[in-house]
Image 1: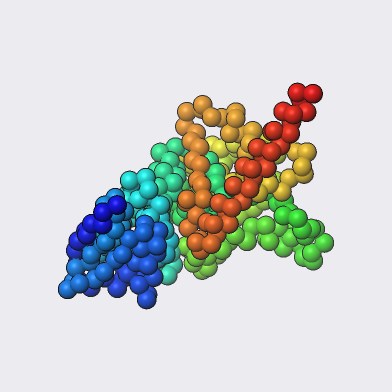
Image 2: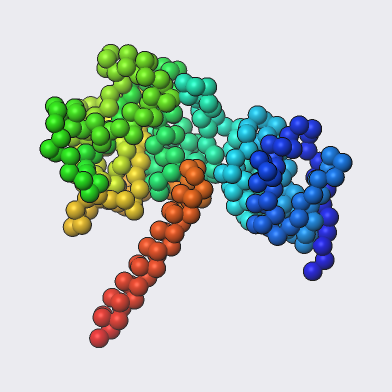
Length: 333
């Protein structure tokens, strides 16, 4: 196999950002694509088999465009650019970066970081009800919160309602001291954390006192009609079919709904059906309702989280295959 040399030119001052600390980003590109990257007189030379050399050069160019747009290149950017290179979609990483939702209280820009997240955000904009389904770390709840807060700031809706079922993840909290709010707060803490980060504690508290932001267990939604609101149901895999139907029939005029869940992390009793599973089967063809499935490729936490999610997905597929084979053997007897 012949070795070819591909020249990459990136604007001055961006090289250290693209290469990473101690050239960690370039080393990852070299290892993944089996190429050698050299810097000579301001130019970057990529040496390797023709196909791999071209891929590596394209990845470096796209990372340079991200850096030129003001981004600090992270390991996650490099991992995702490499993953896209296998699908010949390297340029998508720059297209994704052009989208933005809002800023956190500290000034950090919130935006989708993967193709799956971009499709999820676009779906929220286009539909009245969006289901975001996928593993931990894919940004389902955080992006939904950012969209809700931005819509609230721009007066597209009059209030934000955040809810989740109060189901213990293997731990019993019923005997904790305090009033009802104190008991349910642990279940709702992830929602509070996102609100504090994006909106700031002072603004959140003022709007909470005015009743413009409400964070409550799902049971509190019964009997209400939710007009002119941005409504987020988190951890929907822990709803029963009756709870899901109850929630969906609360939606009024001028409202937008986002329902998030992870099918693999159900805390319901083993003999109970998940309202999220039933909703996917029942509502799949209903106009105005969209289903977005995020995968391990869309995990934007520490790279190790992506590997953990993928390992569990592979394990569960193998287990399901073994169970189906075992049933087939028993059925054939």
